[in-house]
Image (cartoon, rainbow, N blue to C red):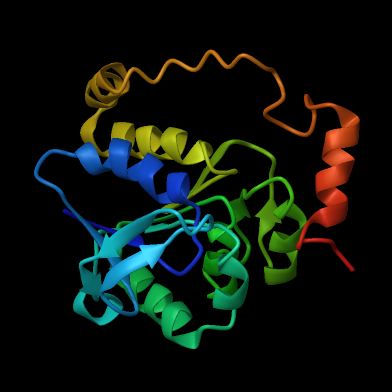
Amino acid sequence: MQIAIVLFDRFTALDAVGPYETLGRLPDAETVFVAERTGPVRTDTGALAITADKTLEEVPDPDVVVVPGGPGQTPQMENEALLEWLRAADATSTWTTSVCTGSLLLAAAGLLRGRRATSHWLALGHLERYGAEPTGERVVTDGKYVTAAGVSSGIDMGLTLLGRIAGDEHAQAVQLLTEYDPQPPYDAGSPQKAPAHLVEEFRSKSRFILT
């Protein structure tokens, strides 16, 4: 099984690394980072780069597609080279997945029309523009499409899909070995729980303001 994790300039690191650390532990699977060009691809902070070892053209038919999000997602919405690759890869993939605003790229490629999907809470409403049905769930599975909410949700998505492919016990083993046992010091991980003034502050500054 080949897992292709898509990279583009200014993606969010954990969007890609979360699924890499969980879903990437499938037995006998090959995980490859792909981009339009090979070489280092910088994250949204600019302080970290992940190497794309293969171009999109070199990975035409992966079994699993993983699309991260991040600030760099916005200019990619009109990148026909990437969108066309997503359509072509999806035609033969077993699973097509996303984390955070990566779902907007799947939607822009026309892959989520009529399907339930999720995204980062700031971007959720934009899925409707592409014919998807947005839901605030952390991980959403609709057919072969698995979308995760913001950033850290990619870990949950990876484990969810890992369980579907390799069985619950294998997914539990990966969860145990990665010691994924969240006990955050604050209960502010969603707009329903966070202080209202923080939610409004980030909404007002967001690139996803609906008009």
